[in-house]
Length: 134
Image 1 (tube, rainbow, N blue to C red):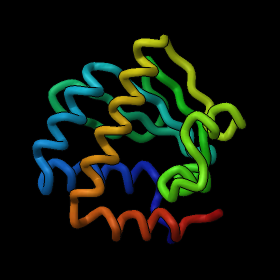
Image 2: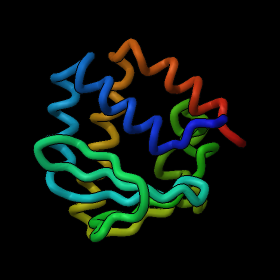
Image 3: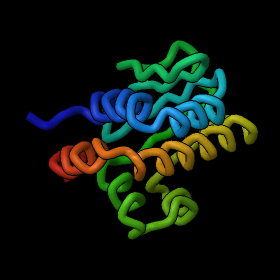
């Protein structure tokens, strides 16, 4: 059975907290108190900041930023086959929110990726993400 993207993200965030706590703290600080709702191939889940990062299944009660994309696009971004700006312009990533909140979500994404490359558990999670449907 293919693991849900929300489950992979939940596990990834937990590993970041354990393996690279400074990067995790930066990620928490960058996200701040906002809620980001994600829709990846119809799987809707949310990420909420605050004292800790919380990944929840289903739509956020109130989302400051909404992002719609696909597993394929996420992998293309991670593999540098496409840039984030290019993916947004091509409609492969749809983002909605105030400019400040979208910028905060963007900075959080950068902090997440910078932490993930330093965490030993992340390559296995990336392999699981790749194992999902195209």
